[in-house]
Image (cartoon, rainbow, N blue to C red):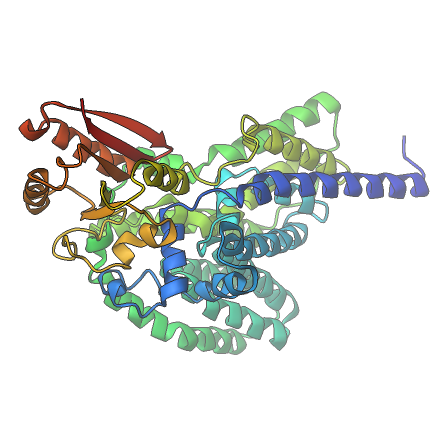
Length: 497
């Protein structure tokens, strides 16, 4: 039975209103309510860059950290709203919102005119997408600029208008300046353009395409040269071993598009949907597949070719819209025009139920409560009479860059600038080594034992290692210790029985 035109329009309006309300609830719960939670390690590096400047001498050990135009955004927001977790994270919320809008436009243009809502909720169904949206780091901005690159590239190849081509080149020039790890994305842009031109699916002449890409290449050349210089010292910033093939397969998350397609197929069979009879666009399929898989494949290959592991999940942030669009593509063969909105609502409700952290009143952004750990350390050591051993949370915090008299404030201990400690701070390196053990042995003679108690504060692995080392020391034979966990931040108190 076909609904009358007025009734069908009214149903569309009602479904759009429901989806808009569902989107607002998802954003409120998954993004906004996580804003006041504690910073995690890299966010505290953002605060340090904003407050002390990218030219602070302590960044000599990690020059890649402040090398992003992203920091202008939290600098402006913190000046307008004050220095708080909310102020620093707000620019990422706005960037992620714009990214969602662009992804919706691309889904409607490349996959199906009614697929926009589904693609939006597919993004929200990705835990990492929501994590980056409420993160004071460049990744949400990277997703936004990457989506803008693709949107204007598609428009330019469709219309052959110079304005779209120049906007594509502009956002392409910005992307590498957001984060140096986004270089594989340019291969996607070139591949999609080549496929469209080879299949004669664009009116853009070859010379115009060459001119636009040359303009973008000239604009990113200084960044490329700087990246090559920094790459020589990449091994000093590696914290993880090379990824295994199993880890590579797991991070591709190929089961999500498969699950989306299987669910749409099953619902179509049970509810007798009319299948979408339109042919898939091969060039659009190439674009989405390259967007989804290009970054992980390139970083996996780079890691093994150089021996420096760059295969870090947060570096795949720019590929998340591609994953969401791949799931949308998987649904397309089984969903007609009237099924997209109910499917989007199903994904939205499922996302809210599964990712809402409903056991907590206020969702956590990360399981790293540095603020809570620092607050407890200040209660236990309210003055400089009690020593607080503070390990560096950054892999660069080792000899020769680390030393006991490392000047504060400094990048290697950026967390102490964000959440200050009132006790007598004793600086320890990221990893225990012979020189730091000698330093700790000397401290046991007086500074640590005379007050009858001391604290160890830092990342879980660092604190656990030093806790075990101190517990074995004969000087502390009559001592006990207790551990308090704040997610992956630990606080240990050693005290005389």
